Image: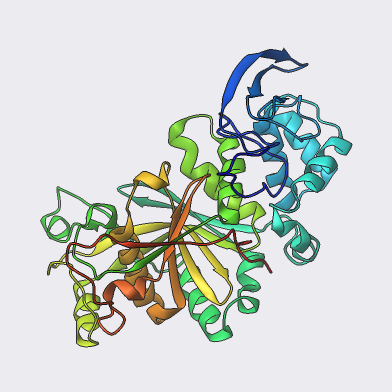
Length: 381
């Protein structure tokens, strides 16, 4: 019998670099039981004490003899507009591994429930061919790879109100043109710039109003699990998850979106009656939104955080929301914020953190409220 604490049933084939649960019964009592050698590598075998079954980290996947990184890369190449034959050639050139076209087709079919952009791919290829991504390197103290998925940006009005989509689109495209990069840069040799050196949103701490945080299972968890297969080192995890979501998810429109919040923006928010606990400063507060999605009538600002359950980045996400709303001219009520990893997903409405009209009456020492919800599909076009 499955254990009483059984979680959601996986959406597709289960891939776990280091399994936390059994893909058959969701059991947590796992024991390593030797290695299985295939054509390309050794696979670690696991035994579940709850259902007494053996499995590998690639349970249920056809073509499991190939490295998982190859599988994830093939999905990305295909959904970025390459044919199955072209994908096979690119894999051979990049990884020096020959993968039959039939195997690539099996992977595409197996993960179709997770890689939801696949059903939009044909129309996107017709209009944009293989030039689906538009990117720019941002030298903002460190290098950020800003990328926008152009077909999904064109379809944004089908998931959010057209006027909201238009304002969001205008800002995302403006980053490629006349963007104030100097606000994100620090030059100690220039006194005028050093005076206006930016404050990092990730390091800002300030008071916010009590808000509700919803814990759920989201499609982003499965996408992150597959995206992590592309990462060769821990420092590559963010970029790998972002690239995989941008190529394969039907709702992910952009990644590493630069935003900034000026003292003028803060003053305007305060005049509108919002509770802004940020200290007054002439310096702009800057940040880069990991993942931007449009789905279910909202713009979602997502932050990938390894070990999401042990982290509380609400302040950082509230700044992202305030800055994005200020730059686009959108109301905060159309934004939702979330942080996630391959296991957990937590979301909240940033308007609750700054609106006195929405603030519940709770004791000052009360802990944040957390609601639990069933798994949601994450939305798709």
